[in-house]
Length: 324
Image 1: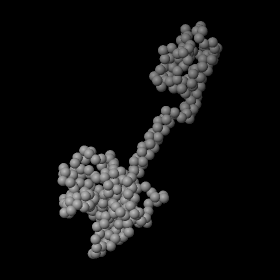
Image 2 (image 1 turned 90 degrees about the vertical axis):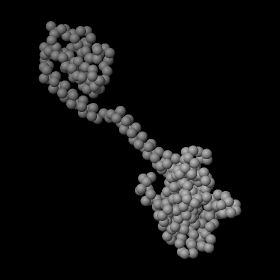
Image 3 (image 1 turned 180 degrees about the vertical axis):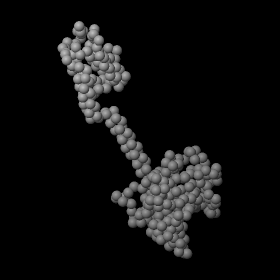
Image 4 (image 1 turned 90 degrees about the horizontal axis):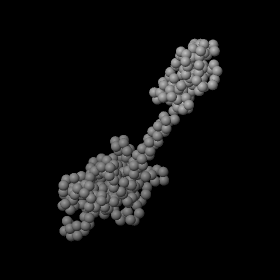
């Protein structure tokens, strides 16, 4: 005679309870069952004194859900084939339902990845914008170039003998736009060099420098003040030279980051041959100078002292080459 414990008070509904629990267990994976039904990680459906069929399903966490079903005589006419068919039908239905349930953890992970990518992109764009010339009224007026500047002691310079004596160099890039539609104001005109003796000079026009120069491939920087201007000088032989200056903050005074070398605070002056105007600057190397007071000419005056060299590359070409 089949006997049941007093834990479950249901008549011959073994098949219904079995399939329902199997359905729930599959949906929930390793979901916990009420303590009243859990014994050592297994679901104890009923205890019998007769020989029962035991069905076991392993959960996602490794726990065994043990479902007991009695023999045909104790189920009121349900045979094992009926139970198996019903279970398979419910399992298939459970699979369909589970396939429509979103993976919350997966969605959260994917969301974090997208957020991280967006943050990194925003940071990169922000950093890149510091090296680029800001648009004026939504557009760039003029001709853009990237200056590749190489600061260091040059032969024949009048710089202090201790400056750059160790042979070090400071390499940097600086984006600029030659604005051929905006005449420079009186302050900028005053800062322009006055050494085109005997030749003809154009009016002085404004330049737009980037906020910062890029040193050490972006690991260091040097601010600009925004003051910049240029002029075209024509020599007696017909050659045209573009002369311009950019006011910079320089590298920190007293810093040993670059040894005995530094970029002086103030205006850096550049000169480079051009062909017809700033739309066609020479690709050759030009010189970079600063203006400092000294006695090298025999009396005290403002002198032009070489501090390095530079080349100018059209901004579109430079962007393709440098990828920023």
